[in-house]
Structure formats: structure tokens, C-alpha cells
Image (cartoon, rainbow, N blue to C red; front, side, top):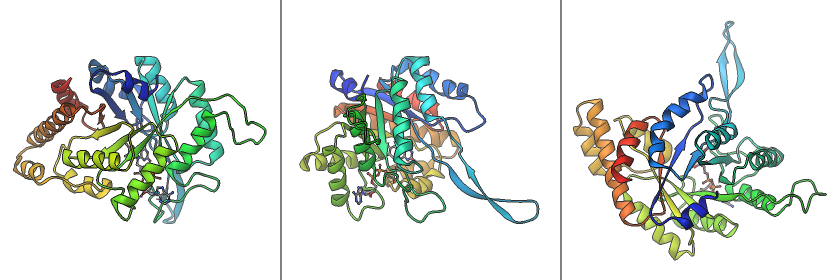
Length: 317
Ligand SMILES: Cc1cc2nc3c(=O)[nH]c(=O)nc-3n(C[C@H](O)[C@H](O)[C@H](O)COP(=O)(O)OP(=O)(O)OC[C@H]3O[C@@H](n4cnc5c(N)ncnc54)[C@H](O)[C@@H]3O)c2cc1C
């Protein structure tokens, strides 16, 4: 079932989770162990992130370096199929521009369609560690909107082969990302908003936000979207802060602010357990306020601490 249909048919706020594929070398059972307790909350869908390979330089025994391709978390498509089969819950694969030619993207979409997957979250992806800015593959998609258009073509039976113009029409429901605190490359929020509106006009059916820790930022973002004619559902993405290191790491990696009140509470915490409690309580308070405001879905990034997500969601649903 499509995410947009889940939302349209819902009488109240829904819950959904995002998971990462297991690290290479681990089995899918590690993912099931992570997800099993969360199934109690009957999530409407589960997102599975996509991780492209990275090129790293590995030191050889003779002291020289060799360039090797490393992919730490493969398996997004297979995991989506496994989740749907194992839990009978809709899975939403993340699909990125980076590392894919358009032909490889088309093949991935065909696989997803054959597996009965109705949803995709389309994203650009970030620059690899060796790039100063994002570089698409030759013949790849440059921005999320280009990838979105490719999915939309397939939904209309138009394939890359010029002789397939009336092929099988896929029916993917397409989600995109949005940034309440602005995407870090955008010169300002107005410019970012313009590109978000373009994605919506090109066929995005809902938005999932980057994590935020201050609900006011989400509410302001939604208001600004509405002012700009963006009227599709905007799903808040939520993540708990669970240790002091994250207070500097999360702003550095995700370009979001940590509110002073949360910061002060974390500084006061004496043990790891205290930090987790602070993060958990903050997540509960955020979730309660968002649910009261009638958000369509509470979408939880579950990486790392599923127990905290379990405890928090248990207070809400
Ligand atoms: C909910 C969520 C899930 C994510 N999941 C993953 C994942 O699974 N794997 C992964 O690798 N990354 C993931 N990311 C990270 C994401 O790939 C990065 O944030 C990336 O830098 C931007 O992706 P985007 O789809 O928002 O890009 P875009 O919408 O393409 O925007 C990228 C930047 O370009 C600008 N822009 C957009 N269109 C144009 C245009 N036509 N001309 C000029 N500028 C333009 C935008 O303002 C923005 O600054 C996720 C992010 C979010 C919020």
C-alpha cells in the first residue's frame, strides 16, 4: 500500500520507523531483533536507508596505499522485500542519485516493482568523503528532482529505451526530503523552499523532514511550505539524542541546532543512563506536542537506540 494512502485513510497520527541495512558481515536477524519490539506499535511503514560505496585508501604491507571500494551497508532492496515478507508491513526504500547511472536506477526500480514495493523516498545523497561537493555519475541524476522525474516517467510507462514509450506503468508513491533548518548547501531557506516546491510540482506526494529538536522549527517550516503552495503531508522525522558526543556531532553532520534547554539538561546528566533519560524525555515531549498538533505520521530514526524509541513511542501510541 502507498504511504499516501496510509495517510489519507488514517483517523489519527500514524507511526513509522527508519532502519539502516545491517553492516556487511551481519545477518538480517540483527535487523529483525532491532525491529521486533517496535512491531508492537503497528507501524504503517518502515523506511530503509541506502548507503553508497565509498572509496578509501588502504595501507599495504609495503607502505604504499591502494584505492579500494568499500560498501558498509548493502542490501536496501533485499531488506525491503524481507521486511514486507516477514512483517507484512510496507517498506519504503530510499533511492539516491549518487553512485547510480540512470540505467542502473531504472533497473533498481524494475526490481522494486517486481517485488511488489509501492513506495520510494527519492534523495540526492551526499558527496563521498573524497569529493568536495556532490558529483553525479556520468549519465546519472544530479538532483533529487531528476530522480523523481525518472520514477514519474516509469509510472507513465516511459523507459530509457527509446522504443519503450508505452511499457508497463509502475505505480510508485514518491516521497521527498525537506529541511526545516534548511539544507546546508542552500544559500537561504527561500531558495531551498523553491526547489522543494519544484519537487512537489513534479509529483512528490509527501515530505519527510530532516530531524529537528525544536518543534517550533517544524511548525514554522510547515507554515512556510503552506504559504509557498506546498500542500502535501509533511512528516516530521524524529531522533533521540542519547549521549554528549552527539551534541556536537549531530549539528556537524546534519546541520541542525540543539536547543539550549536540551543542551543544559544533557550537561547536567552525570551518567550515560542519565543522558539517555534526558534524550528519551525530550523525544516524548516532542512527540506529544506534534501528535497533539495533528501531524500525519511520527517517523522515528531508530539507529543506535531502539530501546529509547520503544520507551518513547510506548508513551505516545
Ligand atoms: C528523510 C531523509 C532521509 C535520507 N536518507 C538518506 C539515505 O538513505 N541515503 C543517503 O545517502 N542520504 C540520505 N539522506 C541525506 C540526503 O541525501 C542529503 O541531505 C543530501 O545532501 C540532499 O538530498 P536531497 O534529496 O534533499 O537533495 P536535493 O533536493 O537534490 O537538494 C540538494 C541541494 O540542492 C539544491 N537544489 C535542489 N534542486 C536544485 C536545482 N535544480 N538547481 C540547483 N540547486 C538545487 C537544494 O536547495 C539543496 O541545497 C536523507 C535525508 C533525509 C532528510
